[in-house]
Image (cartoon, rainbow, N blue to C red; front, side):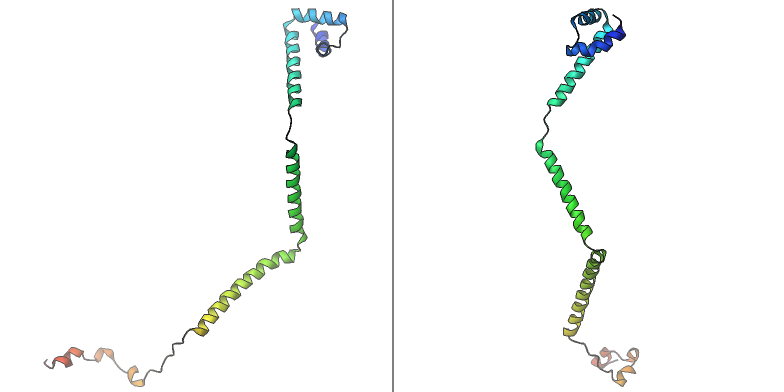
Length: 145
């Protein structure tokens, strides 16, 4: 048996589906051909990997949590999209106006209740007074100069 024909029959041989005559020919060829034996070993190894992969159990609650997260995101987007644009813009503007009004009212109320400092009219004599020309007090207290 040639390698090409043997390699076509390897999968059926591995699964046990070959008739007895063909099976004997494949076994004889495998005992003499290293390349075809290695291909059969890789086929067996691939089968083991696939059977192990199938036996892994997934967490049944993982998909439930993912779907709940997706639904929560969709609901959040729908609630934001349900609000008209003017309301989304109006809210920050009204908050800013409220803060400015509160500050203005606070300053205004503080000025109303603080005692006013009334400026009295300066007598005319004081306006014409020249401080630089005044004599020092020590000159008058001592009496001697």
